[in-house]
Length: 72
Image: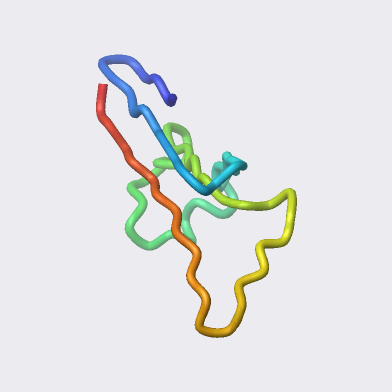
């Protein structure tokens, strides 16, 4: 869950056991072309994923995952 003044986002995932949280920082923020001026100051990215193990998928195999974002 990410909370901010006036609301937040509840993040649910299935098949994604890890989470990466990052911010582009002041020096990298301007490289994101659709970010507003000084947007990095209030920007956080929360990405469910798999980083602690390797997920092998056979040729023509399938792997399913789900991410749901719900505003508070």
